[in-house]
Length: 348
Image (cartoon, rainbow, N blue to C red; front, side, top):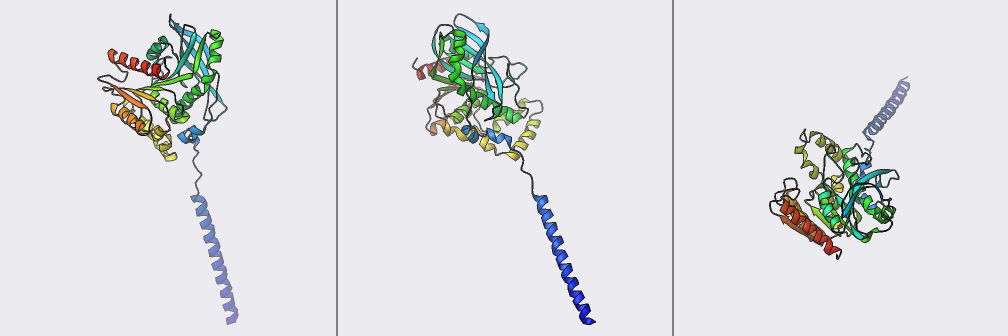
């Protein structure tokens, strides 16, 4: 009887141990299943600079539309082209812009012009570029200034504030890749009397347009002579946080959105200041010393870094000039230096 009871107790103990191990294992498995998190989607990784540099941007046809204004020296008219919705996408969106074309038959250099920030409720094509563009056109240059998505007659941009911002890069780079179609577009309106010199292409950018220009030079590696007026050239995202005091909520909403972005992405991969050594183009920076939007030392640091990287970069400071290079005498001097820079680069 004792042996039977002992055997029973032994079997019971074994069963308890097995069940305990089974339950513990189930708990372990469940804990591990709970601990596994689904990775957050990262669609904006396509816009980091390493990926943008690898992206093949399409060559879309530049088409000219209605005339906005004209005088004896040049015509201002709308132009259109298409850009990919996201890098590498085959879905294209329309972008409009303002072109200035000399009236006299001939072959002319082309300057791509990127404007700074303009509130959409006061925006008109050419705002931020047309004063300088008109001088260039009078002196024998074709100018092209894209409106960017959400402006002019362009399609709407992404509702995501950061994708919206990064789409300016794809818009800018696609315009450069589409320049080879420019003469076909000109032929449709000018029957071959006005042509673009494909060997003489330059870039101009003001404020945030300077940031876009620097980013474009990094992504493409082109050697197009470039003039920057008071470029936003500090690191991202500080480059946008710096201006949050101008918003009604003092940047509260943007900071919340940025916190989510930084939790998902490495912001260093989206900051053009980390890729200045990719730039191969000669650059002239014009900077006012009384600029309250872009501190003059940003431009000093930019040129210093470019020179350290072996690039041909020079800085001209305008004593007492503001963000738009005013007063008038300083603006005229800045325009003169801009024109001389391009003339020298293109042997005009």
